[in-house]
Image (spheres, rainbow, N blue to C red):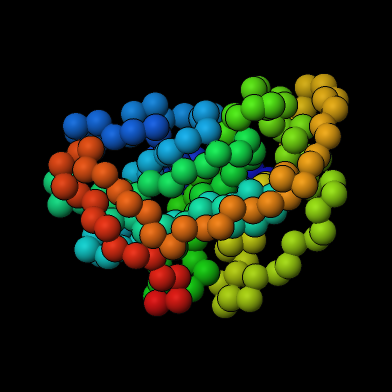
Length: 204
């Protein structure tokens, strides 16, 4: 199972990119698996028969959904779709891509870290993530015909991460507060005019 997840991560990583901003060629700038808190952008390679469709993305941490939005097909860069979201809290996250007509199917996924005070290193974020899991209630099973695909994608974010050393973590009430997920994010036009300002409705 572990090897299967790693293989899926490699394949998904080839079609879904995360970065700090977008370049003039439509590429993500600052692409990595570790980011400072703030705004992030997504670049998704659209499947061949779905290149005019708007896909959805969902960002989760160990506690639940922290961001979601739409991936808008680009007019300037055929075959690619773009979206953006913002995270202010440190953590280990997974972003999954979905389509409204295919239920819980996961089309792509990426896992990444966000650094924010008082957690300035990946080791500190891992310890923080593990502390959340240790005190969190068991996750509820997702009610969806294809929920197994989402569960597999979320397996890593719901279990402890390896750490080089035991770091003390004192959790506060704020650590348990999930943000109010914005239904609509206002995208910019860094790479021409390929994003628009539609609203997200996951119930479509």
